[in-house]
Length: 254
Image 1 (cartoon, rainbow, N blue to C red):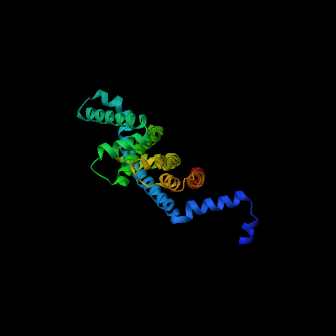
Image 2: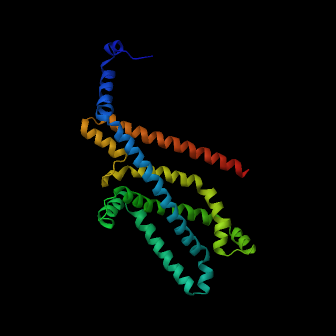
Image 3: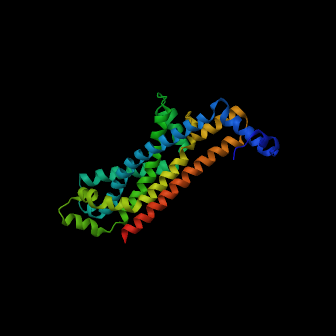
């Protein structure tokens, strides 16, 4: 059904007002392009930050779980390896405490205005900041997965002639990723929403795009509701994918 001029002549006032607001906020001056640009930047930051977080998380989870699982045996032979691992584990604990104990927006501002003060590549700074933040949570997810693996799996690896590192790579890590994959996907969803503060360092992300439109049109309802609906749509889609993945993993275990 085509909405002709005669339709709008008889349309209720609230519908005409919504049409005018839509044109004002999204059509005039091509303001919808800001939302497209913001969505692209949001997805870009989320994707690369997740990759950085995975790398950091795997390293820290391996260090912390190795220390926790071998602490008693290492205390009986306190050599160089024991003290080195203890120092690295302490650094990892400090990192987790600081990152999980401070707001992500404060970390972003510290990265932009202090650590990378000489750089104005705000997109790269945001990716690094969110990646470091995500790494702390990914590390704890993976560490919990490693610690949940039965010690018999480690003994089985050693009986096959694997050392500890080889056992982790070939036997433990594949099982861990299978067990924690749904939780990692949920971390991806959380990270997607956390990037909404990227506008604090001048990045036109999705939230900032909506705010820019509001600042030009002095109309808050339409642009901010549009931003909320876009976030909601992405989260609903990702949640559905995570649910499908969980069902598939449960079927593969039968």
